[in-house]
Image 1 (cartoon, rainbow, N blue to C red):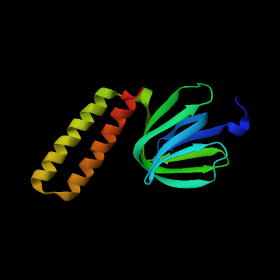
Image 2 (tube, rainbow, N blue to C red):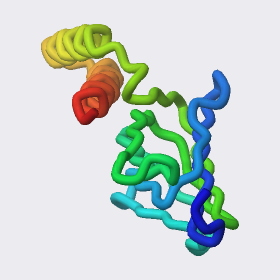
Image 3 (cartoon, rainbow, N blue to C red):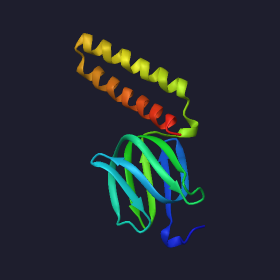
Length: 143
């Protein structure tokens, strides 16, 4: 492994269990305040996450980034360990693009129906579903 003082451990956990666990040189997350890049020995930080992509530069694959679709949650970095607790998360290699595109189409139909019915609650839920579907599609297409 690379020099330990330049190595960060990244793990992503959902209610269903561990989704990701690797050593990295850098991780980039989408917080509610914007993107945050974390490297080894970064100051401790806790940040809420948006629906977005997590990018991990792995130690064992220089020049390669793992990409993970994360749907909210929070990130904590302490002692060169970055832990992400997410509502749901899916590695790019595991995303079923056909299923994600079908979810996007369903969400768009729900948005149209909610607008027609002037239903603000349904509209908000459908917009979040659309964001999640688009995130999964974008992450899958980035590999």
